Length: 169
Image 1 (tube, rainbow, N blue to C red):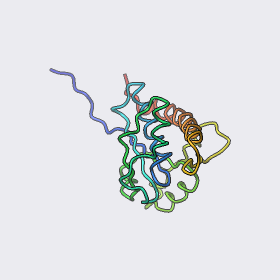
Image 2: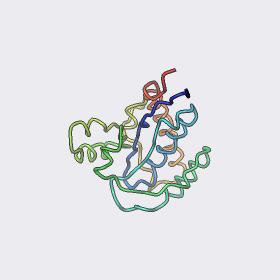
Image 3: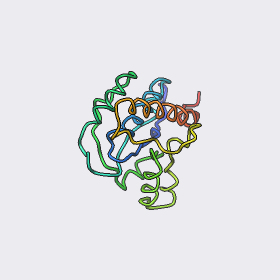
Image 4: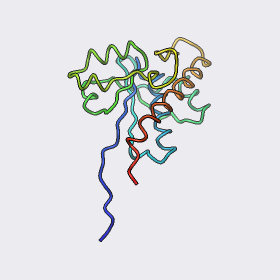
């Protein structure tokens, strides 16, 4: 008789910013790397979306891709999409990159249980601020600073989630 591998649904995290070309793609890639780094890539799904539809179908901003590349990440496959109400059912955790996204997502939540899925990214870290700044109108240096904030907060988030997603031995 062979070994039976338990079937499980991966834990699904969706990162949300404004246009899904700067902050949320960074968080998606960083979080996925953390899961991969500890052998849990098959137990976690990381995605991203924007509250607006301005950039649907576009690649991540070139400054986002370059910031990721400078830190050893690959954001080249990203295509922007808009958050939909179906994302509430398809996600276990919805992570807003700033308080405006948090307010929007809470107002869109069809049920209190859906609203409970929404959290601010920086609430998981030890930052004194709650909003990841939008680097869109800034220079490349700001993209690097935002990526560093996202890495720190995603690491803290992953540390909190890891015990729940790690298989029992």
